[in-house]
Image (cartoon, rainbow, N blue to C red):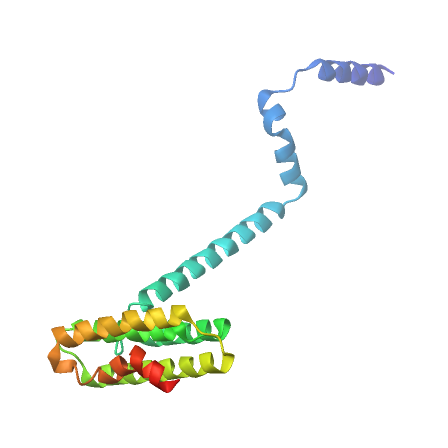
Length: 188
């Protein structure tokens, strides 16, 4: 029985011992890590995945924002066209396309060497989209003051461009005609 008495005395001495500060503060955390060795790996895997996804989303948004300024012939212009198609399908309106084509006409006219083919393509797309929007508005029977206001703003901008750059006035004439209020009233 001497052994049992010795063990009992050790137990009572151990129970009297104060726990260390380290054990009090992080004892359970260390114990849980020792009990589940895969827990840190799961958290780091999830964290890494979320970081990768966040970087990917930031990259896509950055590319989209940069592509918004792209003009025909630029590397990111196809990205701009793809984003326009996605937005157009999601919203059911081609207003974004009309706005972008109008800004492209302005942007191309400000370049030192205007590419006539690109400008002609943008003007054609602009007039087609304006005509489509007018048809959509006629079919819906809803007048759109916002649409007309934007067309008026774009028409004023095209007039200004034509005065500043008379060499491209003939090339942007179709865009001016498409955005002209009198033409809309004649169509009705």
